[in-house]
Length: 194
Figure 1 (cartoon, helix red, strand yellow):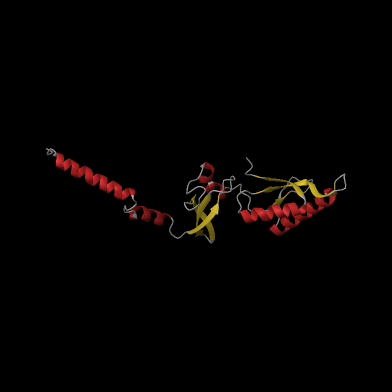
Figure 2 (cartoon, helix red, strand yellow):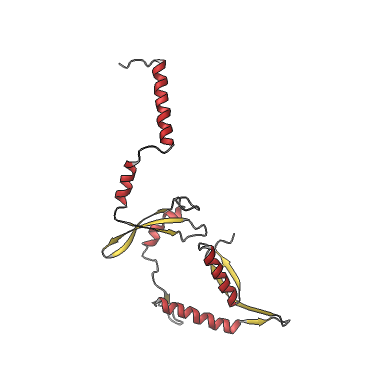
């Protein structure tokens, strides 16, 4: 049978509970158990910081990869707690990044479908960049407007547009816009347009 708790004992128990919860709340609690589980799960991995590719919010992610069968493979992705945008959290799309990375439908190389064919063929990155540059040059030469109807120099290229990423740094965005304006592009947009 339990002995009754006196009033003085009750206050001692409550004081000990308040002190313990205060210490835990201040972050002075032992976390070695949690650290051991995390260290075991991500042992022998390489940590890489990146950015979620889905939308214009630019949430930071931490990707853990490991060497498997001679290739590096991403085994875990989580929100970056040091990123000021998401502070370690991810939306449902960002939480599913690992599925996107390992999807069998994900393209890993540039492909082209020649006119009149229904087949896609793989090309090298150099061929892809050269092809894009050639098409841009051809279109700019055909549609460039140097002067408007009043004779004022405008240097416009109205037939091509550029979609700028909103997940890049300010410097990269600045250079991209300067390049596009230098080519005469007047139609620029970004995925962050709200």
